[in-house]
Length: 128
Image: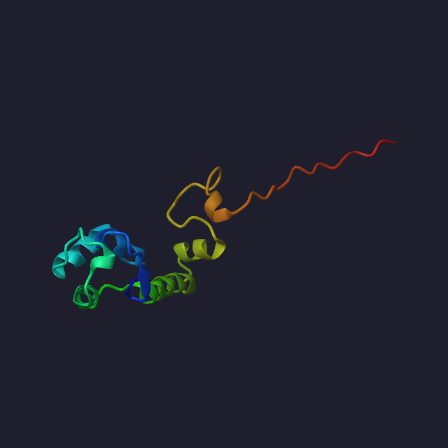
C-alpha cells in the first residue's frame, strides 16, 4: 500500500480514484496533481514506483494544499472563531442546527438528531 499524507491508499484502484481518499483532495484536484507530477491517471496504485509516489507527495506540498490534520485544524479554528465572535453561524454551530439557512420546521433531522416530542400533555380535568 502506498502511503501519502499519512493515509494508506487502496492498492487495486487507479491513482486518480485513490487520491480522493485523502481528506482535502477531490477528483478534480487529484487530476491536477497527477498532471503536475507527470503520472498517468490510469496507473494502478500497486504499479506506482517510489519516484511516482515521491513526485505526488512533492506536488501536494509544492501546491500548498492543506490535507488531513492540517485542513481539519483550519476548519475547526474557523468554526471556533465564529463561535467566539458570536456570529449567527457560530451560534448555529453551537446549537447543532443547520448553518446555511435551511428550514428546520419539517426537516433538518440529520443536524437536530432523533425527534423529541414537545407538548401534547393536556391536563385531564378532575371530575367532581
